[in-house]
Image 1 (tube, rainbow, N blue to C red):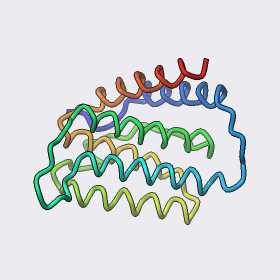
Image 2: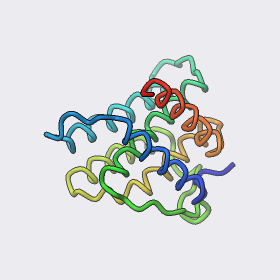
Image 3: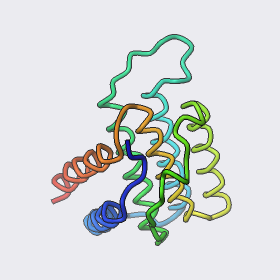
Image 4: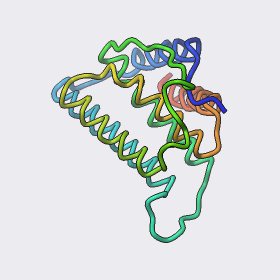
Length: 164
């Protein structure tokens, strides 16, 4: 299963996200960085909660909801990418990451630290690695990156219809 987006998928999601942002009216520019950071951290923790790998007692898993939460996290990341004018690039997932090397809790820990570093160091270009790592999470949940792409398109359509 694929864990990395193709450049065509990245470009299409970026185009759609820009279109979505044009429809959105951001009322308040004050503390926008803090707000974006809190939104992406919240989306990450909602996904972690849905995956539930850190619970001591077994949690009932809803794979469709996991994919939806991953899509919301991707949407939030893409929003920051547009706001910060980050260049997206295709990453070869075969060389960049080993899916079975880390367990899910370690991956969520890495994503959390990654977000903190990006925020405090203002190095949002690392969202490319963040999105690749999100692909590993999705893969470990039993989905292909194409499933995440399709869910993002679905999420985009739902949001766009509400705005029009």
